[in-house]
Length: 107
Image 1 (cartoon, helix red, strand yellow):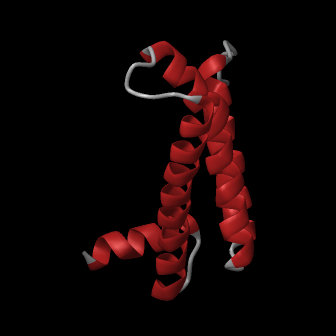
Image 2: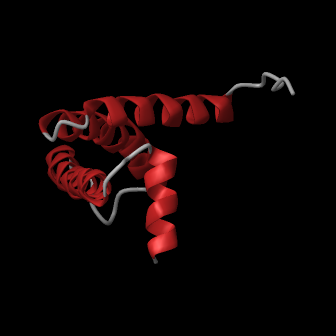
């Protein structure tokens, strides 16, 4: 387990175990908050068990995904980890963009 922790600290550029725990806390609180946003928003617009899956997926992409990104930045800011979160966001969104672009990667 210690090896995994050291690997994560190195990968994320964190020096202390407390810093690693703080980043993991940011991920968890963001996920829980996004689930709350989903519940409230889906109830508000009337999405329920009878809603077709395709409509639910579209609503998720338009509501939950962007709210997760904003909440992630917000929690990173209030915990003093904005720089890490901002860099993580940029890398993640670049990877997602790569899924939808057809450009050949240079070796």
